[in-house]
Image (cartoon, rainbow, N blue to C red; front, side, top):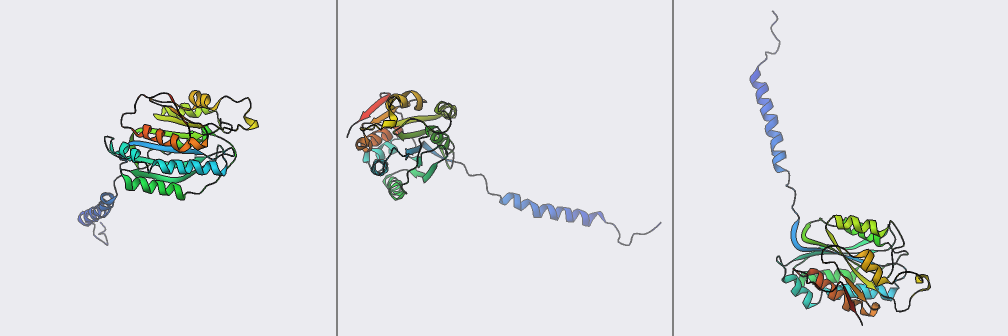
Length: 257
């Protein structure tokens, strides 16, 4: 019988195995836990039309209108009146089916200071215009933004625009997909007081938004009678959207300058 050159001993092997296990275990223990989304009363996505039908002055009116809304005392009071007293909001612009710019990331708004920071971010955001009007593209993009750091009791998309869908997939398909995810789609239709020739034969924009765009529990449409009325319209609209128990207001509201 041959004697092994290096005697075998089960004990050292066992100690090495335990040592290896002990070295590996802390790595598992140190792995950071998945961070839970922060609960808020509402996750609100602001989707702003910057297609070619919106000129530079009109685009500026839109940006100023949204910024002014978050500086409005009534909006701050509305946020404070919710069960949690905080909302999450983000802001992007849209045009062609593949063109969306996420200009202001998700921001927690829980008082005057955070609301002012969000308003200032809109003020500082770049202004760029594109070509077509893809409401369906805006819906699809907005739907993918939810669940990024926040978990709202309600998920709301606020779509403002001055034209019908003319780029991307049918708006009915995008709308159906968003509603299936529990998203409420509200609209802010801006009526052009000097209609463009290419708009001839198209349905009235307020009728189109009411029948084709908005949807979900408590959904409604705000109509701005021209861009001069945009600031008033958007203030009223957001205050209604963030209410802890959205009032059963009219399906369609109108704002004038």
